[in-house]
Length: 157
Image 1 (cartoon, rainbow, N blue to C red):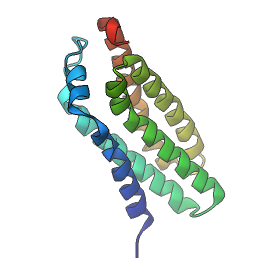
Image 2 (image 1 turned 90 degrees about the horizontal axis):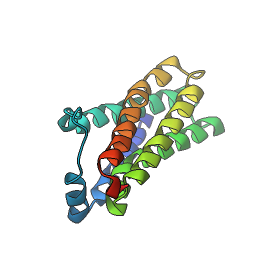
Image 3 (image 1 turned 120 degrees about the vertical axis):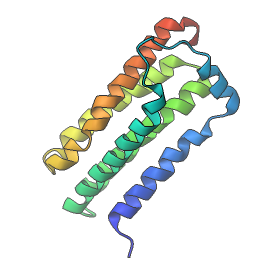
Image 4 (image 1 turned 45 degrees about the horizontal axis):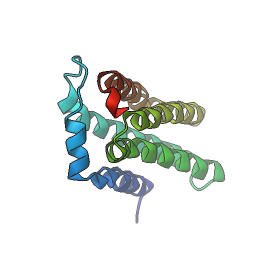
């Protein structure tokens, strides 16, 4: 029997593969951008996002398990999915369009969606809301970093 966590984890994994939509020429553009001097943790970013996505999937699973199949739960699952799509779209869209401004807009949109989702999850489960904390802490860092990169690379805005 397929468990809800398997479906949620599978969807999370499949959506996360969206970063594979990057083309080498797009990646080269991004590599050549100047970065803030304080961005010393860049090699850890893929691991950080892995933790964020796993925690988000766990949050969604808890919400699903509290009221499986209800309209409210399906709408929340849609919001979890939208948040992941916006988050995953950040890198391919920023690189493909060669626009740090697009990245900043997507990052900021993700922060807002994350806050809304956490507020909606809180009454259902404190744990579900708490599992969104890694996203709520990390996403603003990424958004701010992108905004800071605009200052360093105005031609890439």
